[in-house]
Length: 126
Image 1 (tube, rainbow, N blue to C red):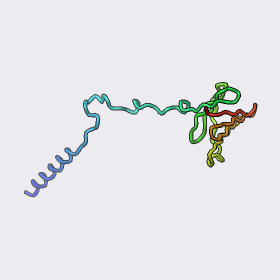
Image 2: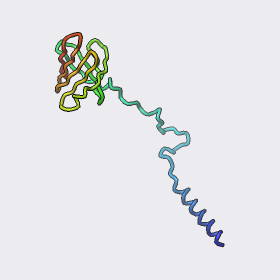
Image 3: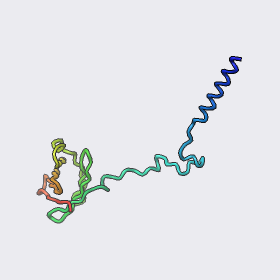
Image 4: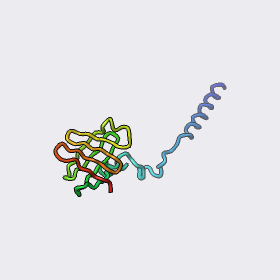
């Protein structure tokens, strides 16, 4: 008799456990329509789409996309250059980004583009 009661208790617990299973949120149909897969998720916005425009004193335009580790600069001639953030720029309100032939200093709404081959270009955010 004791074995029969153990079996009955096991069957009861199995039934309770089966009833506790959760259904997926999008279980309206079995085809998976309406469920978003990783391929369906929109990709993050590219840094170039979030670039800030600056008007330079010579009339040209400079575009800069900022990131924690650096900045991507689109020069007035259309070239794009990635500049890493200078370690000394981690403090203070400005910022500095330094590459091989270019440097960029930020001071409020103004940026100064230092070029090895050419004058420093001063630009302001409109």
